[in-house]
Length: 419
Image (tube, rainbow, N blue to C red; front, side, top):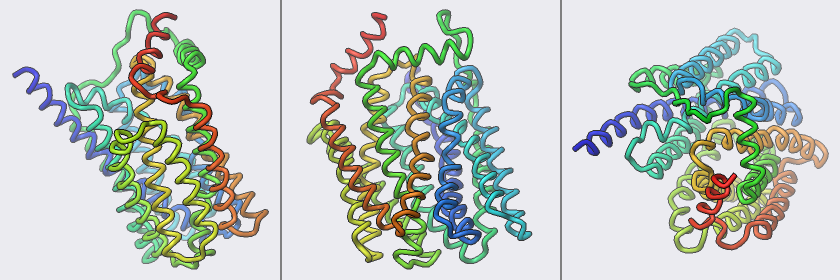
């Protein structure tokens, strides 16, 4: 009976977190389409367009580590409420500027930067809150539901809603975005309880010592370190093309602003298919095979996009990329949770996200330079695709067969305990 009651409380708390995540991801999806579309109305310079994507992800490079360490010291629920509240205010102010005709590309950059810093806190807090709200429930199921919220909210709903409403009235998507973040903050008020992590007797006494412990563990964990490198390379190389997606769709494929949202919608379908297929593929083959094969599929998709001029083929190939990259992310996420000791997960996650998310602005800027130099976003997609084949080869060589087996996880944990 006690176990059933605990699971019931966990289910209720998980529902509050999922409801907040659904609202915030819908806001994210709308904003990730509306901001580039707004930028395109202000400039067609590929460097400035790529710079916006870089600005949105730059906070992950600068702030993921300290944010992760700070979240080990504060109430995670309250941190999420504050972060979503900040995002609601910033996007609301952007909507007011768009309505008044006073927005410039540099104000768009500033808004994207502020939203990015708040996003680091909100997303990291949601990730580390999962074990606390699930209780005796299934972590695998909870993470799957959280990822489904992200895919549906950001791509299925957010992309089409953002592009369609922008085409009707440029202020409208930013208003919806602001409301989504406000609802995400308000819903978390219903998540009862304290979510401040308990301090342990041997826990580091300051932020620097805590981060140093995480770095020491990662330095000696060769498998996790290699996975971080592979994940960072995938992020860097794929962003060369992804940052140019709006130009690829509107200028190269000649799609309208509204059709661009439907183009992204196909990516959402691919993402859901990838999420559904990944566990079956792992069971049929291995995690290493899904990681290497999925990365190669990403390369094939972007190579094809660079070679085709058909909007239908381009959208289908983008769907293939989304399916493959989601499958790869699921394998990497499972490996991270399996191999990293729970008491170090927050700090290792901070390092992981600093590398992976921090690679995105670098890739975005390099993508803008490539498009400027090559004269076409399609050629940037082709270059990105060929490089992704190289990343797949590196993963195949650097990760030994059976690297993600349970024995590897036990080996990593024993290594940590011995030290």
